[in-house]
Length: 123
Image 1 (tube, rainbow, N blue to C red):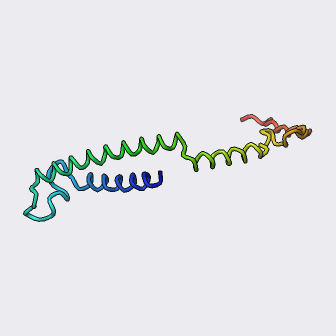
Image 2: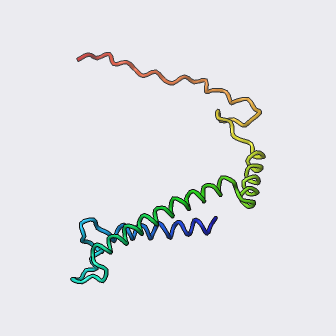
Image 3: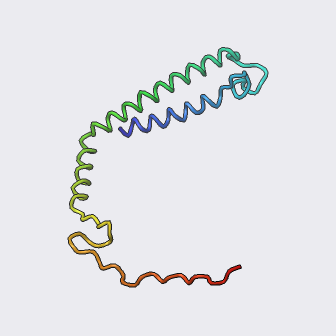
């Protein structure tokens, strides 16, 4: 699975480069920066466009494969998840009201909030 993730990252970087190189108006890095181009503008555009579609298809296929492998959970992933789940089951969870489980919550403070003085002066 790690191999597929590394391969996916490499393909994503390559796709980014393919997209940055091509320019639909015929300019940009696809012209090579010189007057003569060994492939020609049309042929370079076709190669870059086909390469973009191939890389995009590979990204989709590898992403689905990584997801499928992750959902089935390989032998090492399943044993790790079960160990983590066992540890979580053993750990007591804190009470949402601030006390610990099995004990009564602490008494609320008996002092009421001080009343705000009223303004007796009128303008």
